[in-house]
Each structure stands twice: as C-alpha cells, then as structure tokens.
Length: 333
Image 1 (cartoon, rainbow, N blue to C red):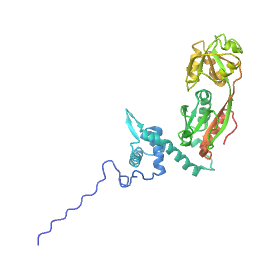
Image 2: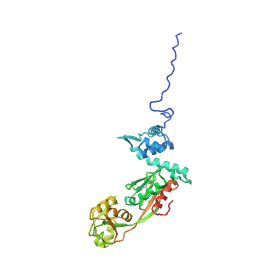
Image 3: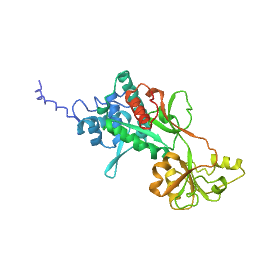
Image 4: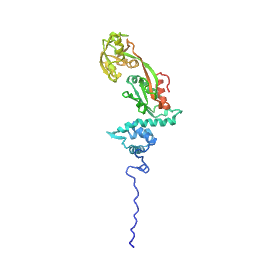
C-alpha cells in the first residue's frame, strides 16, 4: 500500500482587505435588496454634508462606521454616491436624484412614531429646506432665523431661491416649505396665509419723484423704469393700469430679482416697483425713498405652502407656527 501523504491544514479564510468581519460582502446588501432605515439615514446625512466626517458627527457615529455604511450603500445602490472633487467630495447625479425620495421616506417613517407626540425643540437636530421669493426673503429670513435660533439652536434653515415651482419638489421632500404669492394648485397641498403685500414705487432720494409724496401717473411715466422679473418679463399689472388710463411707461431694464432692482435704482434715475415691506426695511440704507403707486394694483397674499404628508410631523408643524408667529400671522396647522 502506498504511503499516505500528510494532511496539510487548510489556510484560514482571510477577509478581503478593507472589510470588517460581519460587514463584508457576505453580509452587505446586494443591488436591488431592501435597505434598512439606518442606512437610509446615513445616505441622507452624507448627501446633506458631502463629507463622511461631518455625516458621522451628525449621526453620532464613528467615522469608520460611517465609512462602512457608505460602502454598503455603494454596493446596494450600485453607485459611488460620493466621489472626490478636489479636497472634498461631491454627490453623483444618481445620488442627487435619489436624495429627495430618501428624505421623503425618512419623514414618513418618522411620522409613524412622532404623531401625537410633542417635539423637543431645544434638542431638535434637523435641516429644513424653504423655497422663497427674493422679495419675500429680504424681509422674512431674518425674522425666521432669529425666531428659530432662539429656541432651537440645532436647527438649520436652508433657503433656496425660486426656479422650479413644481409641486413635485414638495411631494418628494426636496422642499419642506414654499413661501411666496400664489394659489394652491393641487389637492394634496396645504397652505396658510402669512401676510398681504402691496407693490410701491422706489427711487433715489434726490430724484424729482422722491421729493413728491404721491406722483401722478403722468409724472410716473416721464421716468425710465426697471422691472424685476425672474422670467424676464417687462410687462405687468402696472402696465395694464397705466394703459387703462391712456398712458405707457418705458421699461429701460429688466432684472431677475428685487435686490438687483434696488441696486440699479440706487445708482441711477430709474423707478423701481418693489414690495412695500422691502422698501420700508431696506430703502433708507440705500438712500432710496418709496411712494404709493398712483394707480390701483392688486395686493399680493404671501402664503406658506406644504405637502399634506407633513401635517402630522410635529417638527414641521413647529416650523410653520414659528414662521407665522414671527410674521404676526395666525397660527397654522
């Protein structure tokens, strides 16, 4: 009988470089596999901060644990999620498209456990995205930020400019609150009034119109005008009112924001048409004077707009009530 070859013990299985036992490919989610809420929270934090370190601080996790969670997300979603960009990191297009859906899922999951409970405002750690018109922002942002910071130092208000007024951004959670003028256009949206606003004329203090308390329509039309329109429109309600009186103004410039209109008026002989609150709060600092328009113009109603799924979220409800109180409006739901 031939001699038996000695048995060689099998080499122990070594995890791949960069993995931790229990967290490697065998336990990692595969593409198409369901993700748990904890991983989605990591995804949300990574997209908010574009940094593993900052996300770990937000989540009260260690940096290695957050890094491992990012690895699991990458494998599950089949996408890098964050990539190097200079000294920092930037989200991939896929991650940016997915972020609003993840935020919406997290909000809905939170509502299941938070409904009918009081929120601890002082302990709240949350970022709220508020879409706002620049004419409203100039008079509302300071009041909203101060009122929020006074009781909730851990809250961040992220204001974004108008640009995409689609209700989808409210539905998918990329925007928490929309503040501006306009009607409710969908049954799944909720709204509450903040205040009413009227448009007034604004000129340099040394302008002939600035020396008058209330110029006539004819005097108004003798000066060049600047129109503030994000859509680039030169014509508006003022033109309709003047036309009804047999008059016509000359619009010499069209700018995208009220702030730019303010600056142009401050350095020229142009007449601007801006919200009264904006003129009252910031006109004097720029050497401007404002006056009521000599023709009837429709008033604007500035409203808060949100999606119905946020009605039950106590943190969202607190935010809406805080902004309403800061602007002297009735409490909202």
